[in-house]
Length: 414
Image 1: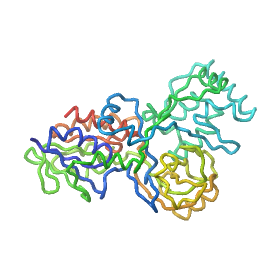
Image 2: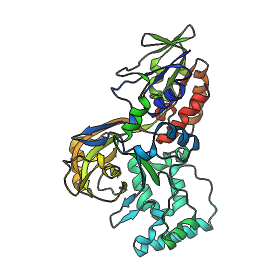
Image 3: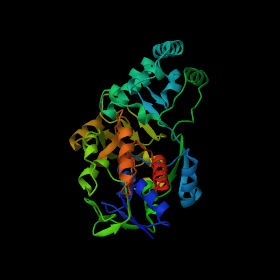
């Protein structure tokens, strides 16, 4: 049986390892002490802290649904929940997606929205070339200036004209003008957007997924792989030889790790790939019925509250005050604890700080040439039996299920 090394025990690496373990002798190398990557969780004072976001599982991909269902008992291990997300505006809390609930806003905003819809319906618009053009063309200037612009500028920290449209597929509702007006006239609750309902673990949050997928695998923890050496048709890693390798780490680390395979032609493009990190703040907040709360206001720098305490009762320790739940609050990039505390004082739902974590890589940003470059590099490295997949290997803004699907595709091509 050939040997295969997988670098990284996040969602992508664990998926690949489970698919391949019957065909290869699989070894997984993970630089942390536990599996999970971006879906890793910790217990803080008995409450569950999603250290980067608040990951839930849902998919419209049949192959992922089948694969996941073969490994987990959804009925006993998970709770199915309808997403109850809102946009916190200065004047109102409006259900998500905002374009279906303009009837809840003031009369002048409604009139401007209707004028925007008529202009969109009556105009001939070229295909949008960037994120700003897409948002204006799809939702109109009123909603763009009220919500989409300030919220997305917080997330992406740049001019939205610089954000490629490549990441959009499957991420946002894509309503027509007729659908937006109809939904507002009839107060329709849209249930087709991503994660409109989701499965959430009864115990352990997304760490439960990582721990379950890690069972039975040969995982070498606390193993930070800094050298992949190709010689004599074998890969030499941490003193052992392998026939094939799947890299599920960060593509930016590949050029400095590789020995015996020349990718100098790609090094400059890889180094130039833009990205953002996330500071995730674990808090107590006022009890509420919501799952996600989006925050476009410029009064605070964070962009959303994820009410993880509402996802499962086990996420809240008994020491959490009555009338309060735990939650995570997200800031793009690094922010000091002093600035975190100052922001929390200005925020709704009276958050109180517990702890925070900073992840330098969470949001990969694509340029017009990113996908072509990645595809070319994959073809080149496959000649030496080196493959890669994952959010920061593929430089794609994957949700959990799409990361699983990408890992499946990679394994099928080996």
